[in-house]
Image (spheres, rainbow, N blue to C red):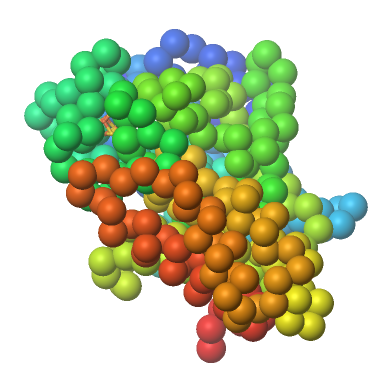
Length: 331
Ligand code: SF4
């Protein structure tokens, strides 16, 4: 361990002021930050604990939008009637995101900000990694890359964003509301993360002093589902994941929103597939063709070609489950 200064913020103003210091890091659930401090990935000079901030854990409905305080714990979000009823895809994603113990601690505002699980990024030995050491290169590009990206990668970084809730939030057009000493923002969940073509060293667009205070889920996505493919069903990061939200009229798809997880450095919306699915019939070859078209621009790395058919099939499975209206929580 190494020394750092601990601040417990009692107001949002305190938290923003403390987070504005160079080298400060915000502590919410701690399931991510403490891990990175332990591995030496993160070395904050100041840790700003925001767990005592009032009014940041409520889950409520206003103007046909579900408002979720950023400090709401994942299990509280997944089990809340508003989320279960309106956004089963988010409940399902959270239940598959981590063990029950972690879900009781991790927050909905912090979880989507988690960093990549690329083994070179996590390595305690110094290996070339542009995310860890700017300009050092990317050991994964020609090294171990079976779990890495099939969309949106560059030679400078081929990592993926692993957060299951982030994928569900991107699929349902959620918005993250932030506050900072320089003013707040509204950030669409699909734009939260940074592709390597934008900046291979970054994970997300938040400034160091910026704190997520709320997540807004507009409308509803009652016909929605999350399918996660992983090596162990009990507890594991995704090889690929698919979040699907449909609007259905009988067996005809009238609208579709689809985000893939663990295939790029951000949840990857399949916009082409979404367009092609409109007016297609559930279970038809049109649906298969529309999903396949979404992968025309997928590019495999030397060791991860298997992820393309896995992701395609995960989308098809998620479409079936969403269309069937499976409950958010299986009995
Ligand atoms: Fe680092 Fe990204 Fe390359 Fe992994 S894929 S070694 S995180 S630069």
